[in-house]
Length: 468
Image 1 (tube, helix red, strand yellow):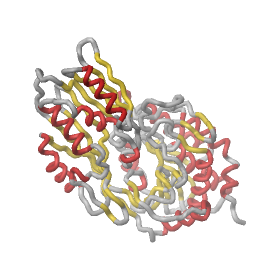
Image 2: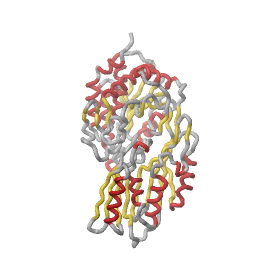
Image 3: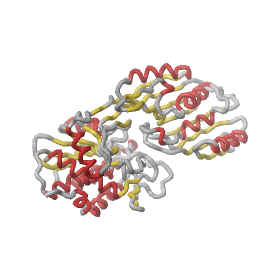
């Protein structure tokens, strides 16, 4: 008898939403100020992990907590292991939300909360997919394990720790991207560009501070600068003229000590798609280059305005490269800071396809930015990851997706990094649909109930096809 997966999942709608809302109420932003041996990336992520595992305990699954930083929920029997890799940590919320981001609201069919689409909602959909297979008592020949991380949005310390002691799945997917599938993920590296030097303290214009961005993998929504202008009134007039001609808003305030505080508001987006955001930091730097600064301030602002602003592919720094399957390099200026006592820093986050190396990107950037008195340091990097479209995993997932949605099923690559790349035969599979609005890493993040249920239905059938 054929299984109506959509109908079966719909029977769990209220229960699924109740569990998801419990999880969404937990502020699980990484919190290094309060981390400890018991809470390796902060108390919030730990609490979210414990909550997720508690659902597995309640429903009769085998669960394991690995040092309060990762864990799993397992079902089935057999030598082969399928992995579903999700995460319950979230990015910082930022300003501009209509409601408390950790007080989930259901409005017009949208679940509005930080983590609803990245990645608590999709992780819960994957969990209910396994739960449905168990409830239906379907015969399986392999094990399936939902592996839950708590540091995906930062350093992946959770997966580093988990796989030191736990079994590596033979194949699987991460419910943390988009449909129809992500079987290619670009490589990643961040370059730390430092500009050092001295400003003339007697110069007519003096940059006291500049800051934008909170994460390398986010387009900065806000930017701030403190400046001593030769003519504050003229600078204020120029600022509001600048706002009229650019896609940002902002404020300008001159204090009693003669310094001016400037704030710019742009639009956040995922750092792998910088063109979808409005980088408040680069726009602020462009505005400030209208004025004459000296030393490191001059070089710092010019570097951002001339080499980084609106360059989403790294062309200006020699990093642009296109692969026929995986697409083009992306570059995001995720963090920009400047203080008069230290130096200017710009963190450039690159996502790159096959055919170009980290070393080539670093060498090219060093050459392009050396004239600004810049030095470059390299952060952790990941190589590009690709699973052939002919692999049975990919073919099965695409087949189920096409069957349930009627949408075109095809392979694709992204610049975002998911846990799928941890597995040699690992991909990302949903939960964002082609007709969905992508609000990951943005204010008022949401996932629709419709998308949540149809993702869970697709996951249930796909998992069963792969472990039966």
